[in-house]
Image (cartoon, rainbow, N blue to C red; front, side):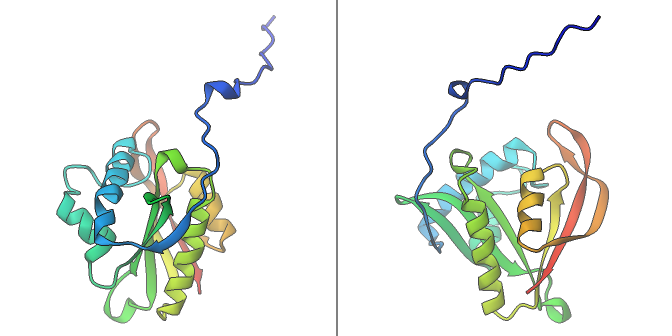
Length: 184
């Protein structure tokens, strides 16, 4: 006979629970980059969402990726002067494909599950539309990142393609990657 599985839940005191932070969204400033880069290094080290490595995403390359590359518009979620999240809106491609936007997002681990990613996503869509883009495409959404997939679907994105085993996840091995799209 199999032993009964425990129905006890994990005590909430065992989890790090921060009070919900009040935040505002604003255009990123160059002086925000150090905090943005700290978040980026943490996310890259986690190895669960971005394909880049710390070795390749030097400070200079990361500055261009998030803030200074032509056509990039970066916004941050600000909590009492601290960068809690970031989004960068940019052309997905240039030339004849320049009407489709792309965006990248990160939220500081201490501020996740507080609505920051949703607010950044909603604002990124507004900015892209205002800038004249006709659609937004996410080229690399890790399939097992269920929080992101659910969020983007709730904002009207659909999965338009799958890259089988396209990402080496830090703990799950090779997993699929989604291409997600939304007309603006």
